[in-house]
Amino acid sequence: MGDGICRGSAVARSRSGKALVVSEFTMDGAGPGPSRTCGVPRSMHLEARPDGSIAWVEGNASTDVEYVEPEYVEVPAALRGVWQDGNGLRITFGEGKLGSDAVTGELVAGNRRCRWEAALLSYEDGVLQTTGAQPVGRAPKCRAPRGTYDYQLASGDPNVLVRSSTSEALTTSLRRQK
Image 1 (spheres, rainbow, N blue to C red):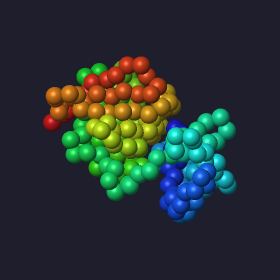
Image 2 (cartoon, rainbow, N blue to C red; image 1 turned 180 degrees about the vertical axis):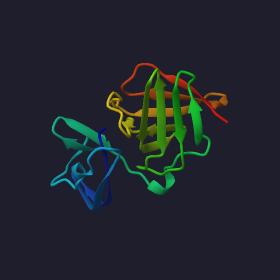
Image 3 (cartoon, rainbow, N blue to C red; image 1 turned 60 degrees about the vertical axis):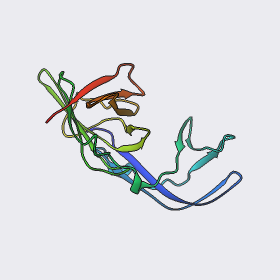
């Protein structure tokens, strides 16, 4: 069984100095992992940085907190559909909004078939960012990568999609399937 992804959201009510008041905090799970690990945390440590940004800090790890309007963050029509790299990687972008599992993929290598899904994190300046891939189904040898993925159309060709990752040095070019 793969890891679950926990997604949370809250409404920021006010900010003053180092204090941020939030309400309506919710947390839910996505992916094949155990959903019981996605409860509302007992406490949240938010850190205001000198540049005005905010981070959610847990132990030695931190995640930037960004303001988003979910109804405006979705998979753009130009990216929706099926894309392949010619080496067994097939990625499908469906309709979806912020936090939804709008991206599914399959990698076929020899006798091994790995299926995965990823949630939409952001779309800005032509770059769609997703969570790392989470294996779905029974795929014990399919490991979830660390990091996030960025997807953008190649300059000048709407039928070529370029994928890069925060955890991989190489980029992958995929072609739109009809």
